[in-house]
Length: 178
Image (cartoon, rainbow, N blue to C red; front, side, top):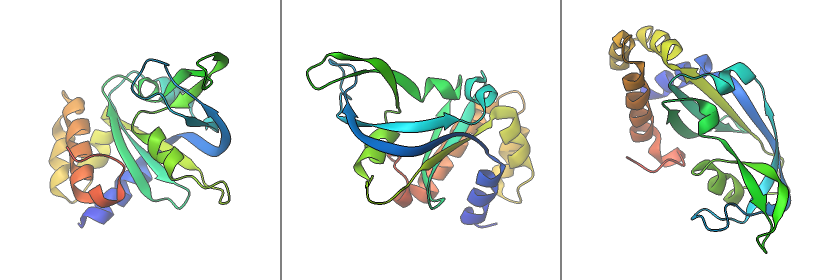
């Protein structure tokens, strides 16, 4: 089984959990003293499955653009909602805007930098939690299927699969090679 087919099978098994439908030219800034200050665009988004969003289990998640191209592969050893944060928003003068904005430290810079307000584009974030991932991996006709046997350690499978994706698809991903 070729890497692209493995990728496609895993992505097909992942559950959509959030849709980022549009970005707004309204700019905001993050943590005035933090290294990822901004300016960032605001967005419209929908949490598609609240239970998967908040589920406390290791997971691997995928960000695909409007053309279904895979753009980012990430992991959490706790829950997806810990990686996609709702950050307090400030204006350029560091005054609170009185609201929180969606933010992801690796994805948001790329989403903002690659956005064109002339072309409508969105993103889907999908997820596979540890036990579900083990099932998907065990059904593959590929060396990765051996990860499916890690029933006591699904976090190892999550971490290994992220590394595999980044090594195989680095040129199309926002991830920095590990």
